[in-house]
Length: 187
Image (cartoon, rainbow, N blue to C red; front, side, top):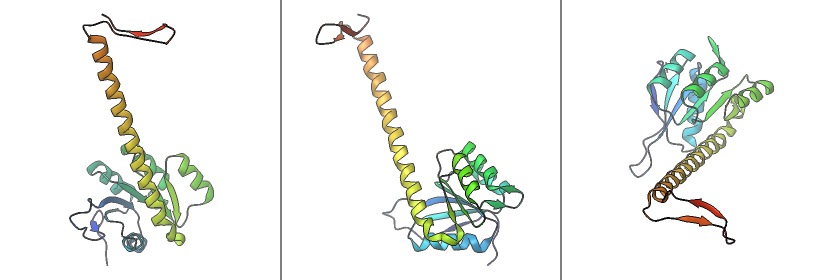
């Protein structure tokens, strides 16, 4: 089947009790490869909706228009490189996992892409690694988001405590068991 640029294909309809499907941006100029990746994820029961981009311009436009949970990208692209696409993604959505799925990426390019912020690289002839790599990337992203939320809540609690401590009408102090003052409020 022919593929129109920038179209969305759901992997499958999720039951209403399941969370919303993943929004996956796939930068790939070869329809057969993009369909192979989609089928691989479909067979693993990863719920997702794909938005395809055949080149870096479409990719950049999609990032400006929508939010994505995962980015998959070929490394060799017409009119640009995978590293250029990675730089665009990191500038627009630094927390979104970015996996290269490529048949041409070499060892040095893999190392460079990981240094530039790619989450992982999977070779097209080793697609059995794709699902575990996607699951690990999504899990790590979820854990990172939970950690950031917990840190933000802790900072907010500290600000509230500091406000109460500083604005209390009674004098409050903290000291060591030996009586050395650690903190006192204005009162």
